[in-house]
Structure formats: structure tokens, C-alpha cells
Amino acid sequence: MQIHVIQRGETLWLLSQRYGARISQIATVNELQSPDSLVIGQAIVIPNPYSEYVVEPGDSLRVIAERYGITVHELLQANQITNPALVFPGQVLTIPIYHTVQPGETLSMIARHYGTTVQAIVRANQIPDPNRIYPGRVLRIPEKRKPAIDVNAFTDRFTEAGARELLRVSRYLTYASPFGYRIRADGSLEPINDKGIIQAALSSQVLPMMAITNFTATELGSDLAHTILSSPELQNTLLTNIISTMKSKKYAGLNIDFENVLPSDRELYNQFLRRTVDRLHPEGFFVSSSLAPKTSGEQKGLLYEAHDYPAHGEILDFVVLMTYEWGYRLGPPQAISPINQIKAVLDYAVSVIPRNKILMGLELYARDWLLPHVQGQAAETFSMQEAIRRAVKYGAIIQYDQKSQSPFFRYVDEQGRTHEVWFEDARSFQAKFQLVKDYNLRGVSYWVLGYPFPQNWVLLADNFHIIKLA
Image 1 (cartoon, rainbow, N blue to C red):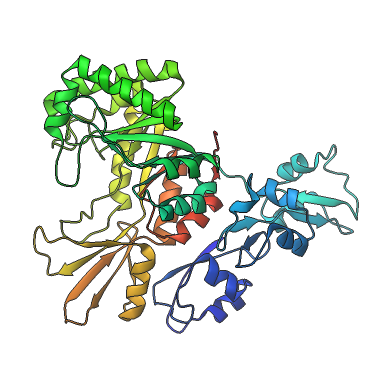
Image 2: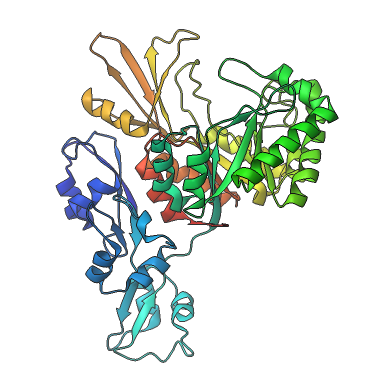
């Protein structure tokens, strides 16, 4: 899979000629709303025409298998699909490749041609002697090796549409986490209507992860957290309610997202984590937390001081680093998750938390700021697809900031106001996926489903095998 950045005058037809991929497949995999309207600077994902197939409307696994002369079982196995009904337009399928040995060919020649190794071909075909292959033998060419990772996605959409969105991307997920249950001062939980999300997850081999929190959009939750953290009795009541909810709703584990915890409550928070693990592990549940993006243990601020990275890494099964929101909704325009800032967080995190316990946070949304920026003026939040739509509508040229590895553009609206939009594209997410590999992390966690970003999912599958634990 390749990434192409649109230059002036380029069309999908030119891309199809250059890369050998069908126009319809390029349009489908990128979910181009207007294939005839490409934007200068727009990043386009190009599927490999030989080993990848982009599912189109009306396709079935049987039709696709027949087209490539393979069986449905081979197609299911190559793509780790357990439910054939969950195949949808835009999904990229790996097509098993077979090669018939020609006179004079060697395994090293075949390996070079397909970008693999002799050893990989030998293993895939159980060849006893690599120096003795004969013309006419059909060899299975193994797909490229990918690291296996955990993938979580939070969702705050509890409607039927939210459940459908989860099903649509379920093959890319290890966990799904409805967000979230807010704790109460008496140790009870504010209920949420998570039934449909849990059913969608369980039906597609995705583990539901319960999320609890102390804050709302209008309340920091510092005092509420202190009330719970300073009382072992209230904690035991809360944990009893959590366990009861998890059992009745078939959750597999817990994510604790306590934010704005008072710095003086840092050790009390650590004690609560230990108490939680002591209660939940014997019941068969895993426990995780969400952590603010810190670059040192001495970092000051209400968001950071009570989040004790070494303690969370020692006590919990894994953590989610919230490596986004530098481009804050109420702050000045800038990249939402700049890669240089993420690296600084990861450099500290891996020094005090085992790498196999770290999920790197990724955001699925874009932001549009009015210029000049007025402190406290809220930016508009929407999907990456909407960002491209606005670039098309207003004739913007997409630029790419090398320091943050993030795309952005400016436009002038109908009222004559200037806007600045920061978003993500295939280039920026490919750079972030490379970080996961470079730092050998456990995986990634998305905030939040409901903002379409088709390029992300196909690139995720191109880079990694997604672990399924259900």
C-alpha cells in the first residue's frame, strides 16, 4: 500500500495509470466524496493491485474468491475474518498470492520479485531443500510480516448508528470501550445505555472494556475524585458496583480515566489502583488506566501531577497514553497530536512503564479555528472527511508541517472570515504507526468512534495484525 500526495493537475485516472490500481478502488478505499475534485496536497492511499482488493458495493466473498481463483476459506484465513457478514465496501482484503515456478527460476529470484525472503517462502510451503524447486510447482507467497498489536477504541455514541459504526470497524479492534460511567460521591455509578455497543462488540470478537471517570464537560471532578480516593469504604462500595455491572453486562475489563486529580491525592490514587486490581483480578477482569501525556515525573499541573507513570505501569495490566489535544478546542490553532510532542511523551513513558503495557492514543477528529484566534473561542470539531470536503469547497491547498508531521490548510468562508484547519491524513498516521513499531508498544487506542477516517483503518491493517482475545 502506498501514499500519494496530489500535485496540481493530477486526476484519479492519472493515478490509476501510474500505480495500476482501478479508479473505483482508489475512490472507494479513500471514500472520496467527489472523486473528480482532488485537492493539491491531499494524501491518497493507493491499494496494491496485486495482493490487495478493496471491497466494492455489491461484492461478496464468494465473488472475490472466484475472481482470484482461490477459495472463500483461503480468503477468510488470510484476512483473519471470522464473520463473513462483516465485510463492507472500502474494506481492504489481502489476496493470497500463488506463484508457479518457471524454468530457470530460483527461490531468491522469486523472493526478490515479491518483496519477501527465501526463508519466508520456505516456511510457508514447507520446502525441505530450498535449492531444489522444480518448474510447475505452485508456491504460496506469504504476506509481509507485521507486528501484532492490541487496538482499543472509545465510543460515546450509544445509538444504533454508534453500534453500526463499531461493527463496521470491529475487525480492526481488540477492545471497545463505551465512555463512560461517571462515579458518584456515594460510590454508585451514573448509568449509561451501553447495551447495543456491548452486543455489537461481543458479536464481532471484540472485548468490551468498561470505562469509569470523575469528570464531565462542565465539571473538573477534582473534589469528587478526592471524596472517593480518601475513603476506603466508598472505594469498596464503588468496586462492588463496578464488578456487579461488569458481570451483568459481560465486560471483560476496566479502564479508569480519573482526570484533574488533586496533586495531594497522588498516592491515594495509586492505592485505589492497587485495591481495584486486588478486587478485579481474582474475578478474571483486566484493569487499565488513561494517562495525561507527561514528559517527566516532575511535570506540574492539575492534569499531570497525580498521574504516577511508574506506579500505573507496575500495578495495571496496561495504560492508555492520551497523546492528543495539543490543538485544544479552546486554545490557539495547532496540530492536535504533533509527532514531536508524542515522541517526548513516549521517551519518558518507556523509561518508567514496560513497553508491552503502553497503548498510544490517536484522535479521529479534526478542528477548525477562526482567525485571528481569541482566547477561549471554541474551535469546531469534525471528521477528517469533513476537513477534505471543506478544502475542496473553498479551493484550499493542503500544507504539511514537517515538525509536527500534520496536515493543515486555511480558507476564507462566505462571511469573509479566515479559518485554519488542522487534521490527520494517511501521511501523519503512517508516521504515528511507525512510532508504535519503533518504540515496540503494546498498541494504540482511538478517541473517539463516530468521526469517519477511512484511510486510518486500511493503513492500520496494512501495518499490523490486530490481536483478537475474545
